[in-house]
Length: 299
Image (cartoon, rainbow, N blue to C red; front, side):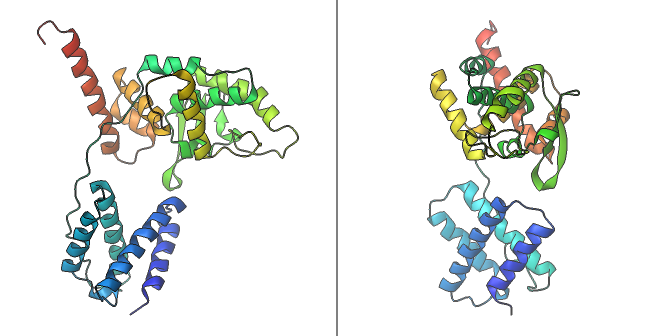
């Protein structure tokens, strides 16, 4: 029987080459599988082939004993199911012990979003009299105006923008590409930042392709975006917490509230499955319910 680390390396190679998973995802897969290897050692299980359904159930119980959230447990079990599915395909095992393990349902949380008046306050707090201020305003307008993920935003290059058509080429998950339109507010802020603020931030530094740059002239990172947005919230005095995805949630929710169809929103967000987009219908339905209860005389 092959060494467990050899099998893990083969699986990681498969995720990289065939599935095109990001390095971030792969690191989490490795961590979850190595955790299971430790469990195997504790149970004196010598190789992956001898793991049985009862062992998988025991591992599930031990994950619950650690007081992990149901979502975290579900992800770990899903990782191991995928690992064994790969081993089964490559004929290293004859059955998948995790195939019948019931994954606990994750708690359904409605996406958190900004109301339109809250966003107006946030936009007004942007100071545009400095290069960094111009960048921050453009960043905020661009994230809300396109609904793209922050990781996607940080990969946008100048050449990905088409100001004539007001579209941007987005490099999404799994090396999927899509074109996303942006509106006049985002366009104006982007043009001002590119023609002025960005040039000043890059003065005396090596030219780079990234659209958004930091104060040192390097590409802006996802962590940098979070810090910028947090500072904006502090300045605005809004009684609200912000995370980059909240702007994406706001983008989708506001489109649906204004009558956009679900399929179009799915395409704009880059969701592979409509079920991922349907969560926003719950938000808009709840918004409609609250509006009804607040205004209907017989509510």
